[in-house]
Length: 129
Image (cartoon, rainbow, N blue to C red):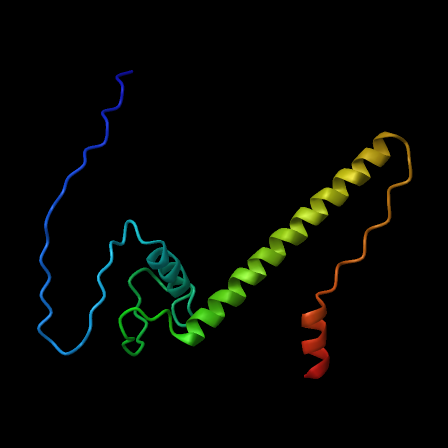
């Protein structure tokens, strides 16, 4: 097969003029990690989740440089934490199943299932409610 050609680089000069009293923020969507994270959070935002591509979510404007709206960021943080917890639980289950398989292979009694670790901060919050 032919060798792939090296990527081409191009340089362009762009002039942006903002003759309004409102600040604007400019970013390159292909290279901005924050944009990608914000885009993902908005795709999971209440009101858009499960809706077809192109659905609209109406939010007030935010000042240039500000992060996501607080309720969107809080929901995204909770979603990411739940995903991380589910991944950790799946990893722990896989490790336990490997121990069980190893014990059975050796003709030994499988080890008892370990007790789940308790998140003390979450337990304290649950008690206070």
